[in-house]
Image (cartoon, rainbow, N blue to C red; front, side):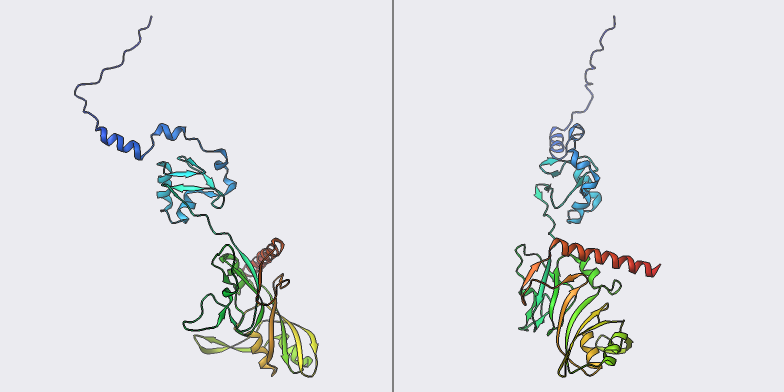
Length: 310
């Protein structure tokens, strides 16, 4: 019959543990047993649902990604009311509630996309020059979520029509970068009667001065422009012009080049997005189909630009 081994008595020479140190460590850092039993909710193990928790924390400015991992392992982070100590964990920062050392992480701003019908004599900027009393486009847009919206591209002071405002920097970059060449369409009222030869010159492209830092540094030909004649009489010609580049005051300069100055310039489309249902000086959010169409157009333009460089 086997005898059970008795527990060894502690050695008299063994040093006493510092009880205050042990208590302090236990309060600040969970035990290994606690970590082992802290099972993650199953939804947080699904990699398709979002981003890694430590990356979301790092992007929010909490600490470096490596330090954020240590904070998670030390039991300092809660997701949806539950302490998480094991990695990897995937979260949706817009939906999940993340608390770090008792402080709730601020949820990311919702992307907002606004169609604005710009009136004349309004500056396309978020802040005008100091002391100026001119209206700026953001004066007109009082969005209920109060995000920081900025205009995508420019319409000059006297021009009117479609202007997109958003807080989505990636989309704004793609819509304005010359590499993608997303078309913008304008309705142009011109003084006098343009003949067919002059319209053909506009289509083929004209040499315009290039300026840098306020100085003329040469001239280059404009890219091909789509020009449709809408109306023509002795006093006024109305054209629909579509550009794939965005030089400063390009349409006004082109029409001045053929001695027919612009009387009124209105932007009516950006890619597939058309101005409709908005009075001058008013705004509305894009509909889901409008936003989807714009994003698809950007994707196609991006692929086309990549193919050209291959």
